[in-house]
Length: 164
Image (cartoon, rainbow, N blue to C red; front, side, top):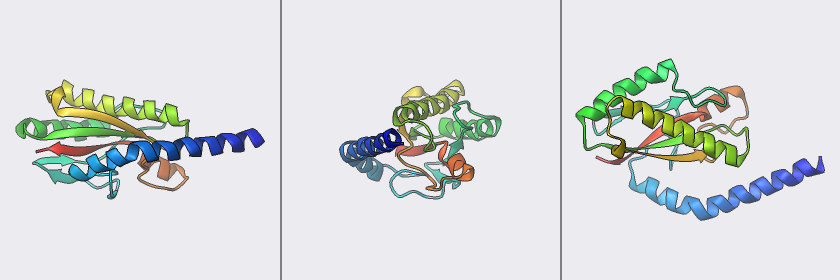
């Protein structure tokens, strides 16, 4: 039990250290971009918005998975069509995870989720140069709860419009 507590303290120290070093620039970038979803001041994780002629909202994933599921495919297909008719809109795809798993594992999983969304959109004809990816792992939860319902809302990809 002592090892588990020591590991928890170490994880908190690493997380706080990462927040102190990396989040200042991220928050600055987020405040300069049009924020949608869990970046900066989070909006509702189920909220969709239309920005630059493109309807964007979170894409959700199953536990420990980065496969774009059927309901997300239809959402992303519609988004791809809108992106193709609004060629000046540039997006950043953010990968997020729930709190389970190590910090390193969740950062990698968040990156795979963001890349899966980017790949899906590029396969539908959206220029890859208009899509960037970033992983926040478990650092920016949409819901702070510790239940399956909360975790489901945290396993997502969200979008920031970086240019219109």
